[in-house]
Image (tube, rainbow, N blue to C red; front, side, top):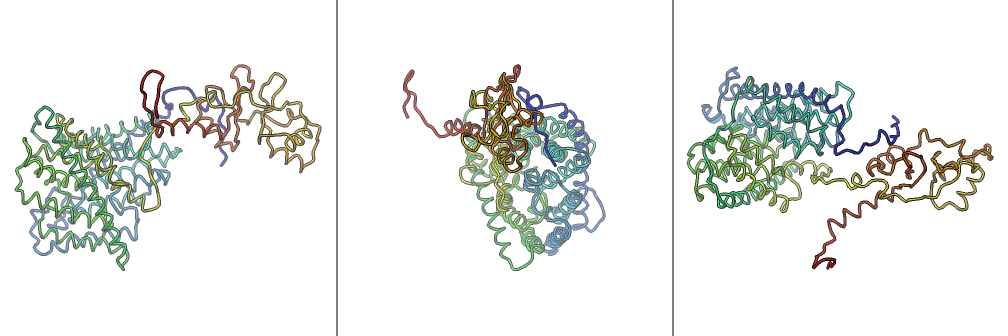
Length: 592
């Protein structure tokens, strides 16, 4: 399919943002996607409850129930393995994309799959996750609902003529709406979209995501419930020491996040060395989960009750230590085996347990220190510091703790990026041969205008030059691969290249024909002096022409030429800003 060469009038307009009226169209579509994400979240919660009742109580019911109240005796060793085996079979004969916790798969689809998810994923991901969690898998519902909501947004987008970038917007909108509906955290869901999924900061994507998250938040009281998921009534004292203590908690849980990530992929490597098909790995992991459940039933399932008790109930230290150690083991083994489930709830438990234990040594409510530990570990593990800081306070309604959660998240994030090359999310993608850069910066090409980087007053050839003269010129005198063709007033007529001269030499047509008659500006890309360098780069990519004439917008006279090499020079300022270190001693003096 050919791509139309952009003309200056449509290629750019000088504005702070690139939004157009299609943003409103996507926002309207996000109303539908947000509703779909909320309904998907409601359905997932009901399926988890149904699965829990079937596996642990032998009854057909979607009423809420807890695994800790079930009396199944030694069957606790068997039930998680049976559920994991079913997930392995679904992955083997359904879709491999349901394996894992969902967020890496969503990222990979966005960056490398043109944001296209299949109906299989939309159906099998929530079903497999419900079976996994309901049978005792130590996971949460957040990863599956992010993948499920994303699939809803992607499938809806695929019904219309949209670009891959627009499909991405609706995929992420679906993911944010699903997360909001489950946890009641619209701001954290929007931040998660910005920090992990969108890979851009544009109104085109931000506004529809906000719309979808708020729509899901509006549906939540009718479908799941109102208010914070884990309400906490406590306050952190004001002053410097609580922030310093929160930073210390962030340091500890940041190291914990790095350790968990390292252990997870060591365990995954161990599963890859097993002499059995990967379909059986979840069942093997399920056996370990069953053993963990025999030690302490609290480590089974999503563990939302554990989170609530860490925050607002005086748990015995023995139970907290068990959550910290046994939960970590069963979660890492189960996730490393490739079964289906999320990571947010387990991380909340593990970070909360660490914060709770540290809170024994710190003044104040231990539940608040658990909350701070939860914020820090989310930030360190996922490399999403704003999401971690806000998610924890939205879950609890404890907004006065924001300074402390930011302190913990910031320190944990710093520790994570210094000691780990990749996060727990991107390591899986990296092992598939894909490299992801999560640092965003302003593109220097978009800051520079054509007049600042072009070669001014370029050499041109007159439109009166004949084909025969052009062939001789390119054979004997030309120093460039192409030249603008101009009329007597210096106005652009087109572009002639060495390739054209070689073709004319082979074809041997009418050698006396002037270039003004054979070149045309109808398809010739050109730019104005105020055109951003990024727009010129787009012209080069789409047209395949390596030198773009720069013309005066009023006279159409050629005032410059901008080549690939000129565009690459803009990287110099970025390199200098990053690596050239100087010390200013006084006015006008500078030392390296």
